[in-house]
Length: 222
Image (cartoon, rainbow, N blue to C red; front, side):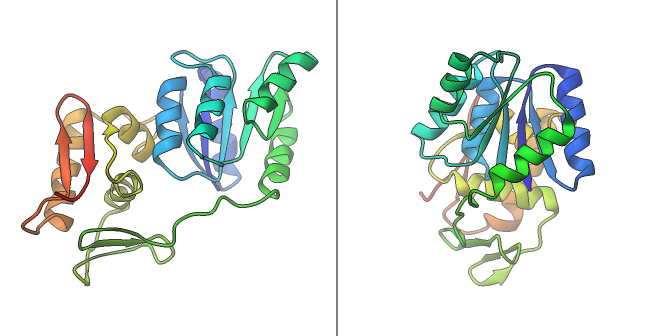
């Protein structure tokens, strides 16, 4: 599964990241609620593991806002608060399940399996804009019918921009979604990747990938 972990406690975040990867999951980690919300809104995930107490935006608000944006990705909420009122508040905010700290990793994995059995999140079969077409099923990209060969990160970057076509995506959201929490990537490196992606898929007369100065990037038709 593609799993987003939003947890600000460094040791816990690293433990979850390592454990989930050992179980065969692909993991993106964010240590800030607002950044985690942007990543969850911008990229497709099979599950979100969300702490309640977070800087930037608390987990209850993150869950509520995701549901307001019609994001139905299953959410497993983590917290040290174990009163009935806290659990009800967490579930009412949009979480699918609630796990109190401290918890066993075996219990966490079992809860994840239970939540995932409640139904997969539907995803668009193909993403298209102008002459660019991305097929997640075959992991292929074409421009005007011609196959475009992308590196794995170029593919993830293009998929992120296409899933948010017409909407600006911040640099921070791109860096955490494409490279992950534990990678040191400069904005200059991001600019290089965007330039390479443009050379491969944005070669037509009307450009699709646009820079939002001081913020990030947006993919849209002219």
